[in-house]
Image (cartoon, rainbow, N blue to C red; front, top):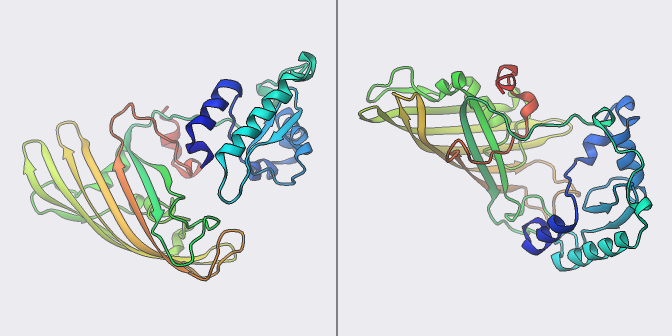
Length: 321
């Protein structure tokens, strides 16, 4: 909500250096990593915020002085009041002496506690852009993580070899085949068909029957359709949920270039929560409808998010930079 507000974003761009981080990940670092300068800087600079878990938007000086907590109005953040907080933080910063604003010894790469992740990877293969969100449901509130306003955007990548699993073995009219296990497992385990990732592990996938068929041939172009049924069920200490849905799609494969000219999938399913959690959900509704749309990146230059489960991708893909 705040970061969809152009005035709020513009003020940050003009007067601050924006940094996105994961406080949970930082808090689970090893003792050795916590002893480094980056972690100590964040821990000390946010201490004056008075919160044990620093989820939210904060302003601090390069010297590590806490200026202000910016976001306000949870669960519906108020961009007007949050912008006022930003401006007050700027006034507070301007009132400090220069020696109090800046750090005596700047941090270096050696001080890093959390390994930097590269934003872009030059992976050869198929790059897909994914979207998912819930439909409106009974008793929905903005506090609930399933609210339709909280849409999800992510990336789903396949290497050139893995992408062959999106095609039948023979590209003749009427040819039909199931998607490879590699393709279907990455699609489901990385949570692109449902919001909240009901399938965490392979054993949670009860059914993944996704078929591809050649429906038309036109020169070097092969026209494909996709149709599938998916069933997942998780019952563990941390994840008690299920998903049941169907997928349809279409694509055009260029035999000469050995690449997809277009690819689109859509899915609609029901997500069931066996246990509602007070820190994520409201009301008594346990089953909601979830839709997803997956498409080929428009072109090689389209800005791509690194897949959120990049650590689980094959090493061969990571080394193809």
